[in-house]
Image (cartoon, rainbow, N blue to C red; front, side, top):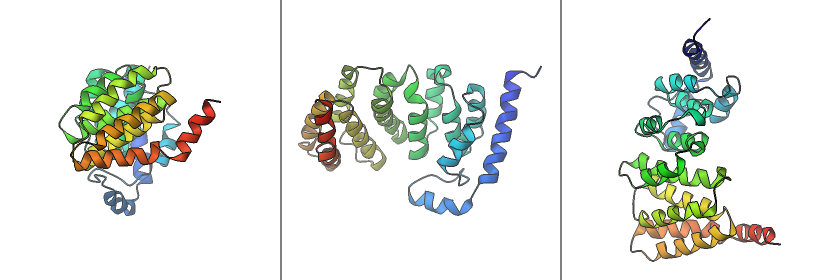
Length: 237
């Protein structure tokens, strides 16, 4: 009988061949314009990656082999096929240190890390770090769990709002955009968090920092929109 690790390696090789077949180098220029690091990219869309992921299903060993390839799209695919229940803190720390592009950071957080038992702790831990994509990962996790983790009460998000306020002066583009993303997603989670998020944004707006003002205004533009307010009004009826 073939050991599970060998089967995973065989499947990884098969998926990597499929990625090579789907590769479209003409897409790389467009990816680069959006700030994506294309040095190890093939030019495969996320839609195509999700289609490929339907075959193997959840497979932790396969995900490890795909990640080890170093190929940009293979690593996104790894985040789709990995089993969140099998993910360890050690793996999360290893992967986050290798984030070199905002899209890989966001995809891994949205597809995998936010469903692990460590998501809330890592969101707080990473959001206080200095490396740009590790810090972004903290806020991307906050945004992702706000959407996906219906099992957690609103009070679990209060510490996130405090951290968002504390880190709102970071001027780096990929950080400040993730801070706004986290604030907006938390504020859309429930009526109670909506009020808290607006109050947080208003306090951030008073900080003497270009980044803080941008984050506050970007968040308030959505949180105070008629569409968001109407949704909560309907929910309260």
